[in-house]
Length: 515
Ligand code: NG6
Ligand code: CA
Image (cartoon, rainbow, N blue to C red):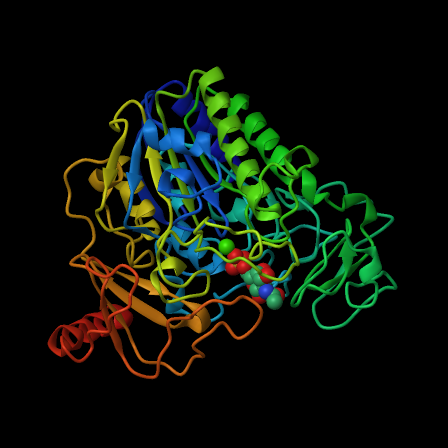
């Protein structure tokens, strides 16, 4: 939608009009009413099924637990993938990421993976009259085929795919460039000191984690030994752009501040916010006031910081009188990992905290802990407090669900995997999905059905993640079948004893892949 049309549209929504708009070739009928709920998606990073105390975690997360006490807690909700980029891709587009190549963990200098014109969740709600923002981690690439123009305009990016405003970490905290990007530009970049980024070779004469470990406040364990910024070495090399460098300690506060500004700006119009925390991804550098907050080391500290973030956002909604009619969704992009490349004692200090919540595997894995994640929905106006759901739910379904409730059509030829499960999302009767596909490392798939059967097709991948993290991938040369209702830990392979079921599931998965 062009900005003029957007302004016009916002004005009309303010005065509560109904109107007919056609945008980007996608006609849609708008019913803009004044009581549309706000939508706040808090999308965390690498938070495992067992990391939140209401899911059994040992690190106190009172603010997140309160979301569950005030709302609905899911036990069978899934990210689409066991890594970040594909999960985010499918949440935002309603299409499983594995349908095309090149949607695995994106490099820090990747070009935009979601191009203008592609159907997205933010563009659906934007057409429904919402003002939309992306705040926090992006990791879906920026710029056209030639890649990001760091010193110029970073376009296409979030603004071209349905967000009115964005304030983002372009990729991850552990990848260069270590700068924030607001809308189309790096924040605070001095034109006299342009930034250069290189993922192939060292540039400039700055220190690296490999050659100058004495400069590090957190040592790397695998990878992550290139350019040093703020005492932390990263993946990739960069030089210049000094004035724009972030301080990892300030991520959480900065994102809360940006969310506050956006929400307060026009609090009489409904908002959709994709609030994507850096916590608890590596490097785990909490703000000074949270350092040492737990006995679990930096990983525990950033969980406490994440909980603080949630508390701040809830306070904001309350102060603005928006609590009652805001749908808050709390979830994670993939499962947990302890050592993911820095020496932060995550493994040594884990004690009796089970980040995977008694599931098998973790981040990167085809086993359950890779993609089954915390998922909480709070909406005081309509979701009953203190309820739970064990219905199968996938993040890929947010697009169709929010389209349906807003009575907005969407491009279902493109967003082919999303399904409307609005009733399930708000805890009403509903069967939910028949099945879903999980994407693990190297684009290997697994297939889960609502009767509890799970099929992992045979593949040639390694049985352990082949670099630092000590995590089972769930891969085997032979096909595997589990019943995760009876055997959530995936210990009993039923591929021989229940061969017929597996054969049927194989066919079903093939159908979905062919779709
Ligand atoms: C891996 C990184 C890991 C993390 C991951 C992406 C190494 C050795 N490991 O390649 O630290 O950045 O990519 O995580 O470089 S994700 O949550 O964004 O998918
Ligand atoms: Ca992640």
